[in-house]
Amino acid sequence: MAEIVWAESALHDLDAIADYIALDDRAAAAALVRRVFEHGEQLAAHPDSGSRVPELRRSRYRQVVEPPCRVFYRHDGKIVFVLHVMRSERQLRKRVLAAREPAKMTKRSK
Image (cartoon, rainbow, N blue to C red; front, side, top):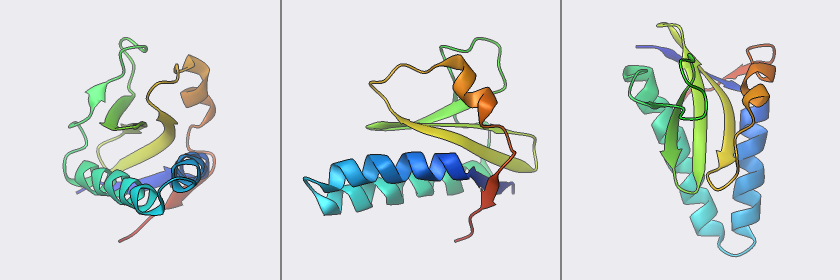
């Protein structure tokens, strides 16, 4: 089972999305955060279960989609690095993932 390591920036991304949703529906925001973290736990057991990122052909990055979010990560077999969370209607900029590589990563346990 792989270890899940979240970039601080990915946690901030998710927090900002949840804050925006919470303006209209706090319960929906909390449910979204819970579902995203559940996907993270799924990746610990099945790190290849996410799809390839269409914008980044032949890259090591993968994604999990939990509407309205896309969660971007990569793994090395032992560790899953969650690098970025964004609203799915936004366009991914290729340099964003590279800039968020494991410089500042946070371990998240259950």
